Image (cartoon, rainbow, N blue to C red):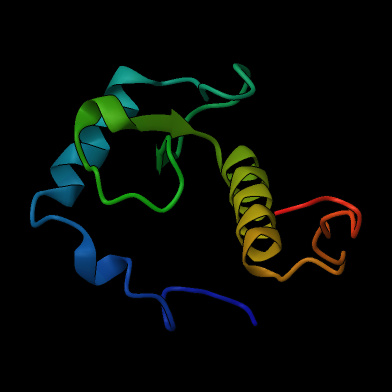
Length: 97
């Protein structure tokens, strides 16, 4: 299922001063902190899925790097929530309790 601003609650959880925070992050990090090549256009939460909006928890990144980072984080979250196909380890029948 695709997630976007239409289905996400993320926007409603942003602080009232988000525009100001975003501007401060992009001014502080004019170049993408991931690729170190393109201009920053997105204020990204360094840790995925957190609501920590402090300047220390944000970084300026370019749109391509942000898309890739978000895709990796989403894949990791899906994998973590998916049950394992492996059987749980069983105790050896000859071992005493």
